[in-house]
Amino acid sequence: MNKRLEGEDIARLCKAVLSLETMDECYRFFEDLCTIHELESMAQRLDVARLLREGITYQEISERTGASTATISRVGRALNYGEEGYDIILDRLASEPSNETGSENG
Image 1: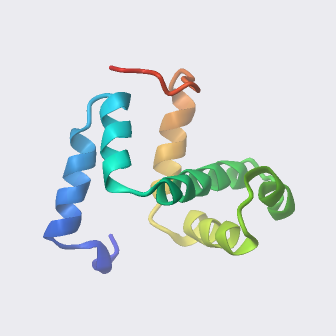
Image 2 (image 1 turned 45 degrees about the horizontal axis):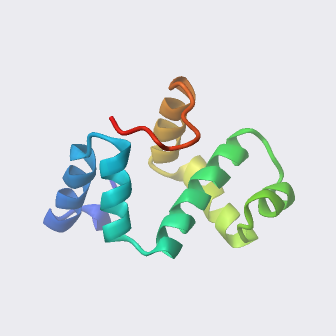
């Protein structure tokens, strides 16, 4: 783990996220915690990671997501040299039944 991420505050945030039990709780927590722009940026990066893993070109990813090439490059570096966080999440999401509406309450 990156040394910059160590600390009580970060650990408390991670524990908070892990304690969420439903989609509704997750939406509510992140709506209180983040701005809409921050949430959209995080969601965009996750989508970029998914598309990069599918072998989609930077240009097409930019067209599909609106992400800048700098963002795409940063996500690509994380996929190639990071802590495999994207891989963990994307593998888990791929193995779950699709719930595109996000209306799951528990």
